[in-house]
Length: 59
Image (cartoon, rainbow, N blue to C red; front, side):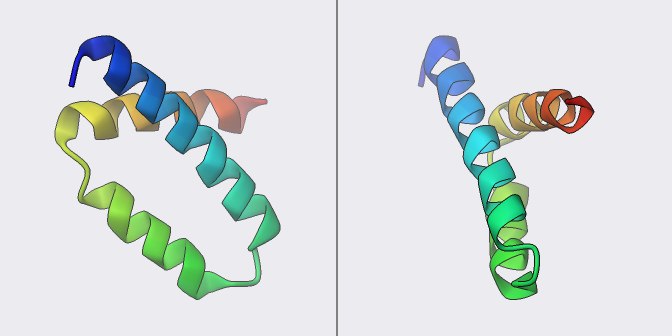
C-alpha cells in the first residue's frame, strides 16, 4: 500500500468512524467492534487514522 493509499484509507475510515459514532451512540457493541478493528490496524495506518480523528474531533 502506498503512502497516498494509506492516507486515503485512513481519511475514509476516520470519516466513516465519525458517522458511526454519531448514528450509533447508543449501540456500544457496534462502537466496541469498530474500536477493536482500529486497534488491530498496522501502526502506520492507525497513526494516520488517529491524526485525522483528532482533527475531526476539534470540529
